[in-house]
Length: 268
Image (tube, rainbow, N blue to C red; front, side, top):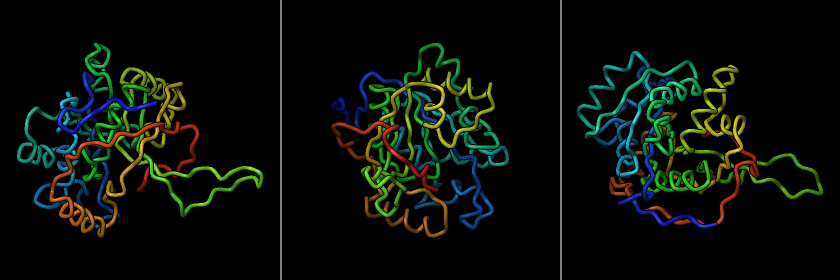
């Protein structure tokens, strides 16, 4: 199994993707009273770095930003100042990550049903250093296989196992995660009917579909802003990359299937 060639300049050929940015958290663990994605990072806000790297891909035709209601005015002012057209659709999130994803999919529903969106890629806005290439890789893999998530092996974690069995592979899951749009919408519609709340997007897909979800290598630099020291680390990593994360994505061969791996959930 091989990955179709992509580049940061062009992205996955012919695929139309919607970008969903989740920014409805807060700054408590980062020791701030404001939403952490609104914190300044190297001359702009955290969440606009995330949007910048993703939207270098022409495959991204729609962008939905999910925010807290109390942040809407600050978010809109920041978008007007720091993000170039096309416009970003801002929607108010729910009381959980899953509920916020459902709000975003509801906003995209008409275009998904009309066949104008092939893939939805969901990303935590608090991960400002996800490279353009990582977005291209997950979108391409999702278009080819059904779903894709970035994972990093956790060698320092030990899983219980039988003595006669080889040790399972334990991984931590990152975002962006990408999925075929119509199966994703249908899965969340069923979850809404049954009041199911998933831990992340892949868990809802796994419960309600047989869609293959493939793992691609994550990036150690794709950190999530959680604690105060994460802001200093993010700025150092940006400086080391010369403020440019628009890399050419790597091309990977065979990838493990999501159901073949044990995972620690998304890194917080």
